[in-house]
Length: 508
Ligand code: ADP
Image (cartoon, rainbow, N blue to C red; front, side, top):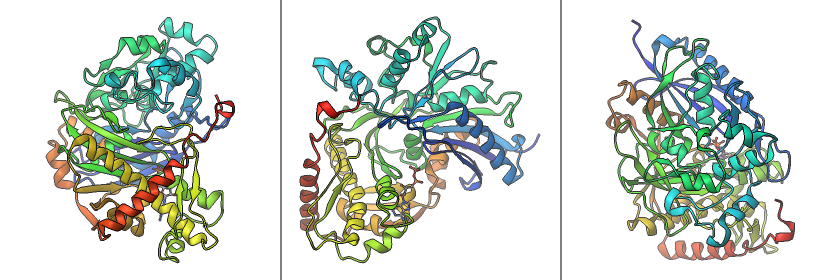
């Protein structure tokens, strides 16, 4: 028998799908990657073609294996991580989706969400599912598909339709699709649907009934680390155990080895997602954070997290590049920001489609405030970068308030951590040490670890801790008085974005 030397992680992300092969030390051996189309039929609507995603996943697996000249006999297990909340509904007999995947950023369910909230308000289901009602989550997206696609509701009630986030869709297809594919998800992904009781780790009948979602279309909820099924006959990973499944942010927390209560990571990409491990207790936030499952290894108890999701961070840098044309590459923002000493009194609050944590205001819109004749594009660049750090600082404040302890160190990853000036400002404005690991692909790594642990390739979390290795750290240098002044001005800027959208212009 060939020795098992690798674990394959599949990262089905918002803009691309990737397959990454890791060795036993948690190092990257090869990567396959393909982008998929962002379909935007109307303002506020964002869709993906599930067939394109399915085919891309197959192809990137081929790329990763070919580049490393590895075949499935050397692969111990496959782990999946994915863009969370994005909803796919398909016909289990044909394997055909009945509608495009509705992506997490899509806001078409605003009206459904308002109606569900009714008199009770957006926190109606928060004690059960850990989440306030928002367009972000999967449940209302499933309801939209069943309400709007002809014949969908009848088919769902007859048991012909299946729902899944993209983890479920990928696993179902990899394990055989209409020919015996397994219909499963893990606790972390299920915790982003609004349909799961976050403490019982089971679908909640009442919420499903309120959203008119037949429970037979929901996948079976599994742990994040166990064998779900095996690669199908016609695939490159035939008979290989598929054994890890975590939503992308939870996978990054796992890959960052945040296994102890109070440890936190922040991922700086298109948006920012900060999670703090709260141990075996699911804490209901009083400060605008989400209660979510962090991971569950096999039969062990689930570990929970509080999450602060920020919609716009890296995408604000893209906006400066693509919409304003002030820079031509993302990294150019660093040199432009260095042309000035400070932000010159300028604050940009990127509430492009409302504000996520800790405010959750869908009627907010972006604002640039504090403008004077003195300001130039250097100040603008600086304010763009600082917006990411300020938003993160507000999430951290909420986390400290909810958990009752002050975080002392933040582990970071994601594309924006390439920007050292930003990381220094982040440490300054948080008053906390910021630390970056050697392997930046923490999301895929987390999925690989979950899969490898399930099959005994790694012994457990201690192997992840042993493999985690620091690359750089930034220590806070700002005086506390200056930090407080900056935060005061930022918070004032945020209040200027509230209540901008009037009911009569809101797209439904
Ligand atoms: P995602 O996984 O969400 O696609 P990544 O982790 O790949 O995101 O990070 C890409 C984001 O980081 C982009 O939004 C880009 O604008 C931003 N980015 C990349 N390089 C820099 C930089 N040097 N300074 C600031 N932002 C950057």
